[in-house]
Image (cartoon, rainbow, N blue to C red; front, side):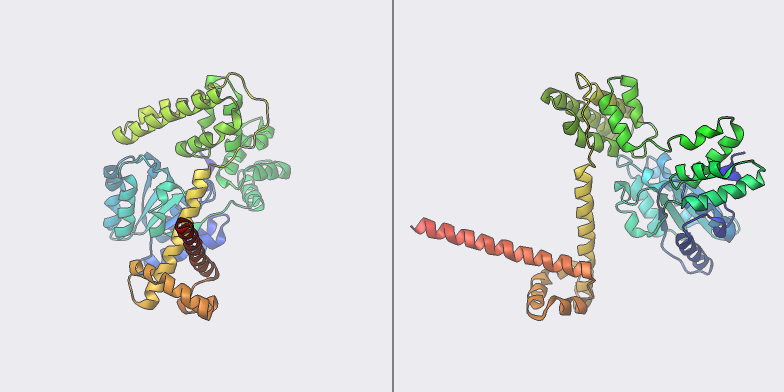
Length: 417
């Protein structure tokens, strides 16, 4: 029997680590049990930190039926509605509550036709408690979902907590595991309790237990890029995407960003981008036809295709960079979200719609210049970051406007001469 099943928590109090998050989820469940309906929860954090385990434990502790689905297996709106839609609108078998668990919600790719909108429909209209789990909160597939949920963060579990848990398991299994082995497994787990437990079981079943502590947890994105760009071997290059800790689209963006950094020859750069664009064509066909067999062609083109675009491997050191487009989009999203909050506060104070609140920005800026930013920030209940964003933005607008006026004035004078 897998120890991760055998030693799965039976109640919220047995979940290792993330005490504050566990307490928040438990309070949410108790409120539901009392008839106080809360928003769906989005548990987000690295793998092996107890997100799914906590959902199962809550269902057991509260005596709820559990309906679980993995979003990575869902490709159409009809499938989402078939699996989770009915459960979110019906009572449990004996009239009690039913916990709807949508695991790995960030597994819904951008190509999933209607999948994200169907999940959004479920969480907005559910009469049952709903929990979603995700590894990355800012995955693009969650852009609309996360704002309709209460977000609960799960962090990597402290290695000392993992070591203590493994020691208890070792005692129960009567396993002669040394403190050095337990500490090695714990530190190498990178905060992943599930994989640490699997390693401990492997050490129990294998004579090569000493090797367990030194193996890699996941392929690091930088190691994958280094292998892809330095190899000329087709199979080795295509294998870089296997078991990677980022999804297909994200890995493609990493490759795109770093091709010009790795390759010096213009013809090699051109050929690499040509093969990457062909991968995009197959990804488009996946989206249009919903035929996922094309994924292997896309994967081979963007890995082996790019790797074999060079004549010979480069032996220089390259510092691979995070995709700029992702950073830019993330910053824009964060800024837009902050501005929405500002407009909402203005709308509330002036008794207008959020859309009309935008019209008052110049007036508010002028009043701030006369009476001080602190006075206006206090009146509209802006926090420090919101006040800085709003007034700096308006200040830049005025400066740009003045610069344009001066430029136009100089042009007019020059034309008259």
